[in-house]
Image 1 (cartoon, rainbow, N blue to C red):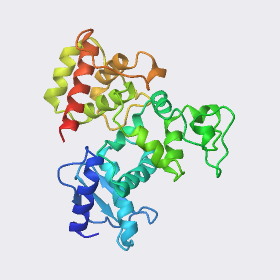
Image 2: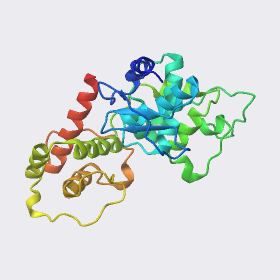
Image 3: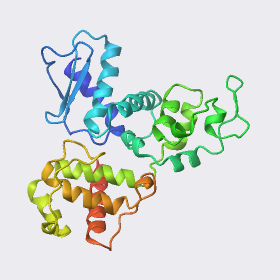
Image 4: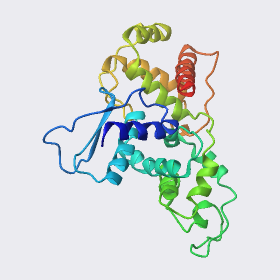
Length: 276
């Protein structure tokens, strides 16, 4: 992919990927890369690399996938795979600007509320007797899958007749969820300069607490070990109930130090993204 073509693609995708760096570099393809890999994203270098020899349509598809990785490094691969289909749909249909990666932190309860009532029945599908989105589109997931927002987005992204109908209702930015707040705390812990992080530790009074010698499940590996105790204190303030990650979150302006600091980190980060 030539540089100018990448620049044009980035400009088209930027309204949907507000986390992209101001300049996206086209990086050289590294030697001896696994032949199964067709694209790479480097947050450190602020760019993406594409395997030589791809067809133009393949180049664009791979580039959009890697731009998602670059815009939101915290997204696991399975989420990028489903969201790149939604990104392509947004580009094809010219949908209004929206932070597409944030769909990964969508509250399932709110999503189902927005999709109710379900779309009109289509003779090509088999509406269930109970109504609801899944039954209407002819999908009967097991209980565990039905509780996973990822599963819902997989169905929407999969090219069903109701893709446009569903995205139209999910497109307006949802209220911030607790899981979205956790994402911003992780991002701050990864990106903050040392002085800024020391200020957080002072506000939290962390001199009284030893640094944990273990990693905690769900905390990204690239968060520096020396910041884990602060991250854990902030997570406890945002997620008093570990099962409530989909619940709405309002950054508090008063309360315990952990609550206030977590709220400030979240509000400032989200404010910067909206300014873009």
